[in-house]
Image 1 (cartoon, helix red, strand yellow):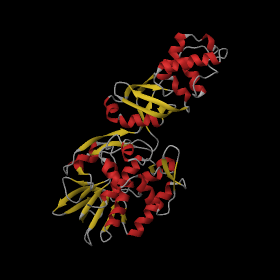
Image 2: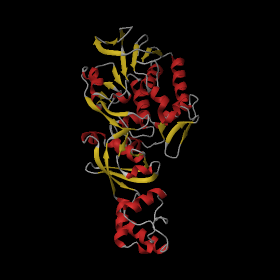
Image 3: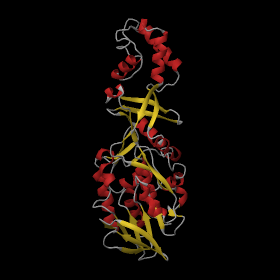
Image 4: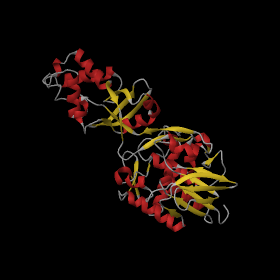
Length: 407
């Protein structure tokens, strides 16, 4: 890009900030301005991961990485070949932010402080000379010849730019994308993603705080199956297995107004005959012990008692007296425990929506609009979203980096 060219980035979140840094890095002679509608940038970075910032995920195989994205997975493959999780970690560590990988693959700064990431990004912006303008809400965007005119709600009311990168994030309402639709882009209606399941008036909620490491979840009637850790809460169920199901099932679950049934496999083994045989083995090993006190599987004690009670097995029933009928019923419950979900709850600070500018509206090699030259997109404004674990930030870094090349 020629010297004195003007580049605007709309949105001061992770994607917008990274796009601004990329634009200035790849086009040092250009004037790069980042417009943020509030008084703070990187707000979501600040609160993510409980204030620690889950920067990315230590998934290095591109195909496996793409599987974490219910929307955009296949299309992201080429993007990740250009800037992926390895590149993200190298980028921050080369700028003085050491990172660590936790057992579940999530990557955090060693400091356990999201401020380390924010300080790094802001320091880089200052070093490169990115101009950050706060309280600059954009009201509309129009094309004038080869340039773009940005209209602001307040002063300055209008400015001209040679290129514009839109990184305004997701919107809970379709109206929030109307200005982009008016420019000729196709919009997928926004819907909540990453939410927990409400199971009201069910005694399972009395086990709040109980966690199972390897559960399998199936949403009945929707062909959605996930596995992973499951957490019982005072309102229902949460944890990675549930959050994955909410992400992959976002459109379908919205369609049934978040009223559906889930099938929980507490053991992670679907073969009930194998489970029944394990119960028989436990009866042979501990014939005189009570079923409630001698667990046949490594489940939390409170959950084991709950399932025993649900099977209508008395607390003092001995293993030798369990019987085949009760044993098969217990095996069935362990593998196919059904709950009625009615409603959802946003998962902590991880407010994520699916929907936005569809990927067939842009050139994936450049993140540029197919409708207008000089217009680019990055981050959640696109119809890209992922499961929890640092994947959404990775999409922001990757799309922001590529958009900033202004190819």
